[in-house]
Image (cartoon, rainbow, N blue to C red):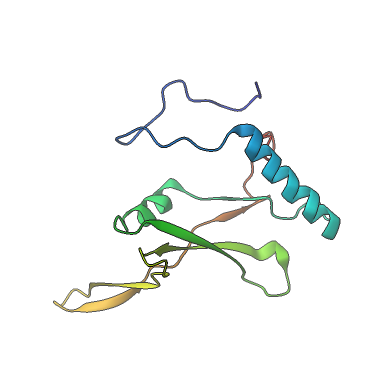
Length: 134
């Protein structure tokens, strides 16, 4: 067993979440990525993960009629890989990105509001360096 926290009594909103992938698979995936990137970039501070606040996950969950969310990789500075971003967007049942939604404008009309989210904080800025996934 690793030294990571496992909740004895999960904190659940309503229902038990579907199971994730096995820890060994997650460790293998992240190890493969680190090995690949370290062959390209010898700097040990390359981005290894993204922290996504649960409140932001809930914002995306509000798109209840959308079967999925797509994550795009981007950079805020086109010449600096350390500015890597994870851009999330809800996806409709035809596999199309939903880039905006109509929302009330306060005067009885509607206005388009972006449904594209940059909700992430890159790691190594915010990391669990003890995690076997790190």
